Amino acid sequence: MKNKIRNLRKEYNLTQDDLAIKLGVSRQTIISLEKGKYNPSITLAFKISRVFNTQIEQIFIYEED
Image 1: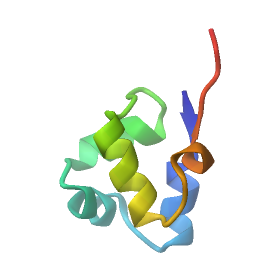
Image 2: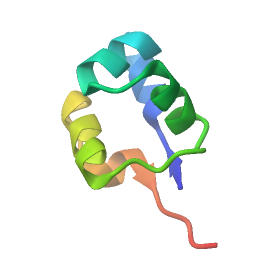
Image 3: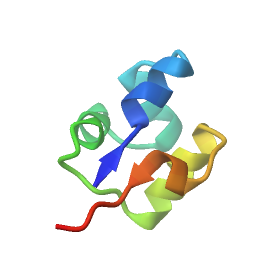
């Protein structure tokens, strides 16, 4: 699954550490999300959408294998 987290984070002037703190996760989790190596839980996806004030579907792009 692709996502727009890196672009949104930069648009909101947040570092990876800033975003990690807001979400209550580690910086490594943010790195993995941005690289597309980790798919978040639905709870984390909702938290991310709230931070960026947008819908989950605007952040995560599902692609079938």
